Image (cartoon, rainbow, N blue to C red):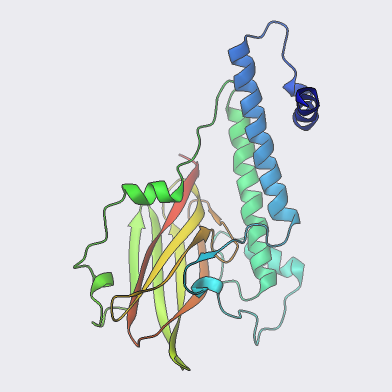
Length: 266
């Protein structure tokens, strides 16, 4: 079994997996780990490009609040080529249907691959990539929500939009009331990212918490990307998405966070 596993690993990593005669064990281990990391990145990009919906994964608590709206209703379908050209812009527009969402996935995968190729050319084989912090680890390091903050003032009217900038990446959100549907009150919300900095960044995960007017946690959503896209934003880049939620009360609030990775620093 050990021999079979070794042969399989060698076939996957290619001739680079074989040790050099004059190579120290520590140098061989570092080179093998770097090769495996690059291979994993290549497989990740290929999965985004070849498997529809490969990046889509959403975790909900009580309700699937972030499942989104029907973005394709009432829109004349663009050709796939037109959708891809529309998505491959510095300032990406709001995707209106599944074809445009798929085009944005491909653009993000292409930008990610370009950055990684540049990094591979600049780095040496002796460098060992460090693991990324997980979203929950980052959130544990953040200060707790202010109990007197606007997101916790249940039953009081607050501004239906907000804007915050972290490390030159601006996050703008706006909630729009959609009326009452049965016993539920519905909203859609628009989220826009703008990269004002000189670093190329990628949004990896989102985390939203929805609270009703009685202070009850109605919904919580966290998972990779948004609308199945993990957008890559070069300097000056913009990306927008739209989704929705519902509450049992006519007032409520939402707060949350996004995890970004710096792909290329100035």
